[in-house]
Image 1 (spheres, rainbow, N blue to C red):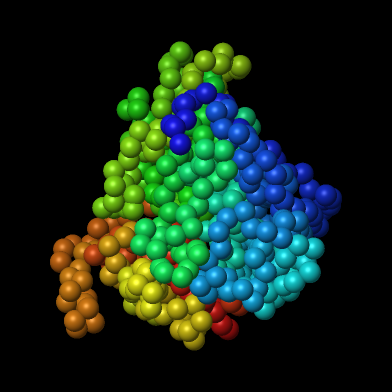
Image 2: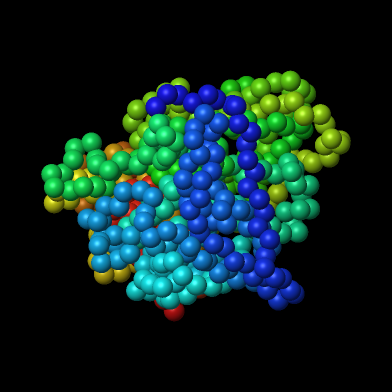
Length: 511
């Protein structure tokens, strides 16, 4: 279809969800998943999407650190899926309902029964449920720092479809320590959920029914990755945001299926990085660009002071697939526009603090175990790409069973040609380093021969993380402490086409 005009629709800000009730001991929400039509661009017909509480993205849920929150997730989606299902994908065979859902609060410190296990799905009206914990009301203890989390679908075999249809939203954890820093707040604290999509001429969502090389006899087939040709922020194509000449806090989230974003401002000005996925950093860092793989978040302060009348475009120049794929084109280069056209409503007293949160570095000596885990690129029996973790599929016996309270170092050994965003549920971790190695020697001898020095984490990775970019021909090392809960969780690539097609593994935290 024709290119859509840029910067003609205003950026929507997702509404804040109000609880059904709240008292001194707990807070209770109900969140319904539905299908509806929404305008994603003024030149498109309204698009049929899925969302939470009739909103795409879903409404923002705001909680306090250590607040007891209960959420009843309600599936009210239609019986027919909006997008083509591949019944050859494990977990999506014809013996399960086409439309099913389960919600994962990404980054949450939560008991496993409320984590959104991929096989704990349920259908409309909770009529049918998956083989795991049959629970509709989830409990969130919010044992987190103040941070930017998000909630999204996590159903085995169709996560890529359910999220692409619109099932995602922000989940923000706040606390008094964060408030005391006097960061930009209120209407100057804005979440930005960035995605890519492709549209049919009638405005409906396009998702491929076949890979580039179709398999004879199969109506639908998993694709290696999906890259849309159009960028959206908060559910609007190439939006603009009117801002005052003052400081703003933006919470950036890459919620795409597979696309990486390398974010810059065309004004050349710096962004002040203040937080990674799991909380505020030790001190702000001025950066000119931020690379976000799928599911990664970063919080930045952008200062529009003395820029009255300026129009500033947020751009992207990350190739797809990353790092060696096709360069961006005119449709995937522009993300959104800031217009410094609003009058200053009051004196800007917010600050970019010199220091924010102490960051206790985890020492390698504290680890009781090291795990060497490969990221593998292979082919299935039909000749389709098949990505695996440690050369194992979802149903293989559980091989990662860390003990509660133990500290481990995981060596992510990337033998593939893609960068993979690896996400661990339950825990937060620190990146130790990345280091180049000889892939051919590893494949022959199963031993690591390093080819260069260790590379420390990048500026925007020097904080608590829950998702890490594991680059090709490198070993990426992360360190984490397992807890505070025991139970069954998962770790996986967050490129959704990879995750849905076997690049996900369960792990169990034991006593």
